[in-house]
Every structure is written in structure tokens, then in C-alpha cells.
Length: 168
Image (cartoon, rainbow, N blue to C red; front, side, top):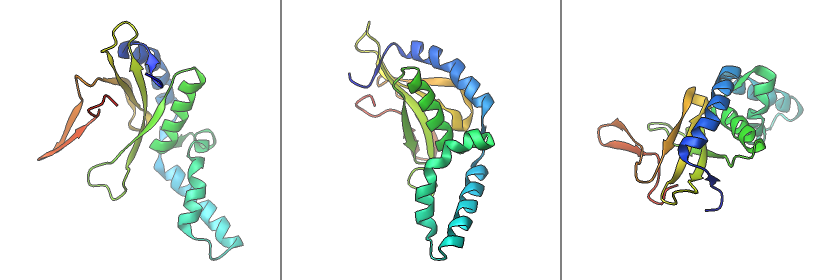
């Protein structure tokens, strides 16, 4: 399958785990860094244009999430995930950013993480994704396969499925 790493989930996890652990130790999860940087940018823009809409400034400012890692040593889950996925891509690993709605969250997507789709070349039925979450400081990759869906019970009657029916 296009876009999948040709390896077993265990091989992907073993390769990525030390990189993930190093990333977690190097950078802090800190959404206040992003908020403070955004407020400074909004203040700067308002000084130039008093009618600058916060929502427009925010949309233009959001790509800076990754830059804040180098400037401040931390960012929110999006910045941490983008940076880690970029690092994997630089090493030739097809990494993608995933977004998940946090139950009870007002935002449509409340959290970001990294995932690497895999397909074991020695066993075509062995496929799935390896999930990595530098934003939650989860130091070990999580292997999820379609025949072993990851389910997380949030509350009464609420279940989150980590992998869809088609294996992605």
C-alpha cells in the first residue's frame, strides 16, 4: 500500500522509540508558550492595525507552533507532533499528523499526535499504524492493527476507536 512503511509494527516502534524518548526529554509540552507568543503577535498587529481580527491573526500565527520549540523549548501538542513527524520524515519514515477530538472539548479537534502506517512485507495481513504522542509524553509507541483495534472507554457508553474498519 502506498504511504505505508514496509516493516512490521514492532520494527517501526523499535526504530522510533529512542527518537520519541529523546524528543520528549528535549522539549516541553507547554501550551502557554504558544498562547503568550500569539498574544504578543496580536498586540504587535493591533498596534499597526487596530481592526486586526484575532481569528485572522491566529490563523496566520498557527504555523509558528513548531518554531516555538527552538525559541522557547516547548510548544503545544501540534508543534511537538509536527516537529517529531518532520524528524521522522527527514530519516525516510512516512509519518503523518493525526488529530483527535477530546471528549467534552469545545474544539472539533482537541489533540494532535504522530502516526506511521505500516505494512509488514513478510506478512501482508500484518498492517496498521504506530501511534506516537510527544504531546502527552507517551514514551513508547503504540502499535494498532485492524484485527486488534485499540479501544479506550472514556465514560458510560463512550468508546474511542483508535483504528477504523479499513485499517487506517
